[in-house]
Picture 1 (cartoon, rainbow, N blue to C red):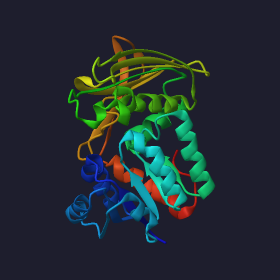
Picture 2 (picture 1 turned 45 degrees about the vertical axis):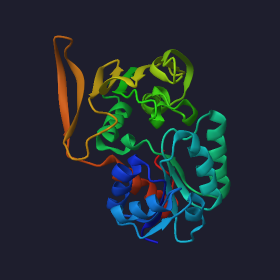
Picture 3 (picture 1 turned 120 degrees about the vertical axis):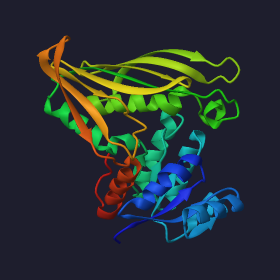
Length: 308
């Protein structure tokens, strides 16, 4: 097998507009099927994206014998169920973040995939982009000294009560939708799990979801991560990694534009804060979703570990 045959579970917007076309562009991937709860939507999506087959139910897709892996962009509260079903059907699983609604559910997913012998990866696509690959290489090499703190923020404005991201029962809210990126990148930078967490949360009085959350994560190695996420603020995102000998700044760390040059700034030495020595590293355009698919598919094809 030289390419992974993919099935897409759901015609969700992120899959239709971003992820599925990116998987189709991957050198070692072939999208062969898509499923929806609506036969009409499944057929329309298949035609729109040039996918050979469509299925009227998610389970029908999982039962198909010519599919190796699935991508799951369902609402948050359905991730665990369908990841487990996919594993039991022998399909490798790339699941949108967050992997599950609770720690217990996440462990069930991990156990189900391990028992079935299939690959599992949570779709934090930003990790595969050259900006982050380079940033982490710089951190690991000691370019900014010993990391002491990570500051991050992620926000956008959405007050539509009918939007799935504002539905508490479906795993809506700022933390589950975008704050998870801030948590994930902090674990990536420190290469560890937080030992303590403190947070301040503001909730929508009618919808019940968190609309602004700020948190402090303490890591056992001595570092701290601080983040704010919000679904009721101006579109904004950024990350600062601060070490004993410098810092790294990433202006667009998450929704990285696939068609534009991107950059990170590395400051180390000079005469801070007045005249710090700052190097700007520029990266040519790259699609993080395509890179994610290629690296996951490589693990499937070679039998090696998934990237994370």
